[in-house]
Amino acid sequence: MKKLEAIIRPERLDRVRAALAEMGVFGMTVTDAVGRGREAGITLQWRAGDYKVELLPKVKIEVVVLEEDVGKAVNAIVRGARTGERGDGKVFILPVEDAIRVRTGEDGDNAI
Image (cartoon, rainbow, N blue to C red; front, side):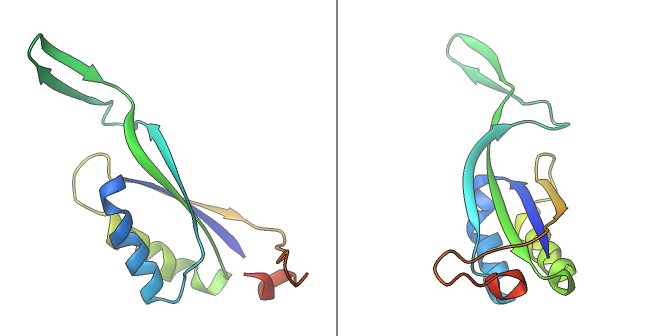
């Protein structure tokens, strides 16, 4: 099993969720986040002048998938999140040692 952590633009969440659902991945955790990458924030204009916003709103999606589904899931996330502009986000892939479904006590692949 692998855990995918994706940091994306909030406005792309519905597209990513739909792309994952299309491949049969429905369980996920979504967290509001703020951060910045190489885009180093943005400069906005206001009545008093320009000001820099260094930490931009983002969404963190966490999904656990079987090893054989990692490629498809990553492609679904990238396809749904991509705008072609800086700040589209990142996907991190981490190993998962085990999982336990609390309700039934099932573990391993059966728990996801």
